[in-house]
Length: 289
Length: 186
Ligand code: SF4
Image (cartoon, rainbow over all chains, first blue to last red; front, side, top):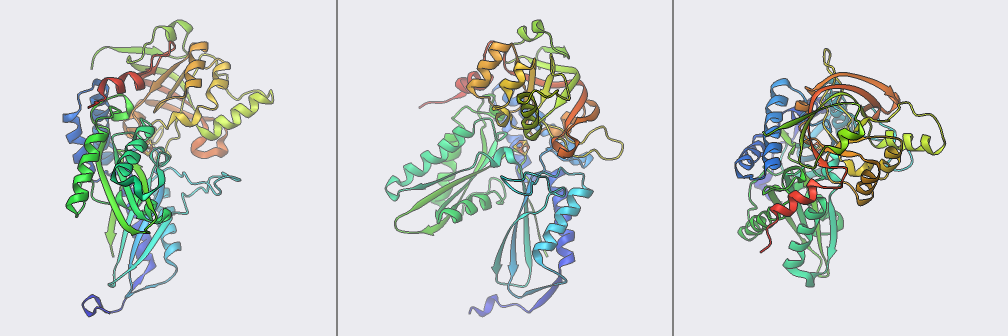
């Protein structure tokens, strides 16, 4: 074990987690993060199409209005995706982590007047659960004695346009690029462009989709740490913006605000690629407790 | 922005014919919200010959499910949802006399064909600009399927609801025309 990562054991009441989740759900719905807003404002200047520019101007106005009035920027306040990085030296007391997160969602969606959009069963009984629970929760054990919570309320318009393909290694970089471009093309105006394109490459089928979703939790527009992947992100962004889809699909120069790629080692015989799209209402908030 | 065409509901055949893809419009009057679950129930009722809770002749359906209203508000945030999910149901609704649809995103070939046959127009609102859009809603009342929560059918009275004619009754399609214009092939 690496001693430098060891920390003292610490206790945290799960009530604190409920409180934080509740607050972040409301904040996420009503207050678009500055990183995303900055990219949208830049897009207004870049966009040349009449309806594209019109849409972006309305979107900017809506961001301001929702923040000032503490109103949800979009009526689809999403299903809540939570990434919890739990320090292995943290002892959670007073209840289960899952219950605490769901309680935070329940309170946040009620007190924040957010829309409850979760149904009990995906096929046989699509009955609304009435409180937007359960959240989709991913926990990861990490060194340390803190917990980091990332909250992504995810709208269905963009989520429905996600795609996965198990590529053959022989398809190479070209195959990866083509599949990503194809996914964005097929999504067209449906995911409320301009979008943020989350890409997960490698691992297994499930790992790649998780990476694609995690890519959306990244600070919008922040490049990949590896210069080669950074170059690929830039190239893909440029190619996507040549598709002409434009804001809302009305035609234009800005179809995507950013491309975020995440990768993981994979099996000798496989090359999974997953694309997870986020709309311009790219809500994400985080806190470390 | 340039000239805005003002529309008052219900829509007449003439009004629909006069609208062209790319027209900017503002709608005033009554419109009805309905989305996935409500469309499923409506089309099932039509198939079994039951009476519908709303007469859709000349009316506009708005694909939307708002957030709950805060005390003192008429409605919460209320933007459009993806119209493509209603494609399977829309031809049946048009056969009932529906004249307009408001949503976001492209429509299927079948829907566009049915729009041409029935003289129907499809308007696009800005997806995600839901707080802004709520400003133009002056009255809101659940008129059917209350149990569906956000998916219930609501009768809205709107004033200068802003949108764009995305597909007109002749089949001209902004989603195709606009993208064609800005596509860069090198
Ligand atoms: S795709 Fe995003 S912006 Fe569009 S309606 Fe859904 S949640 Fe809202």
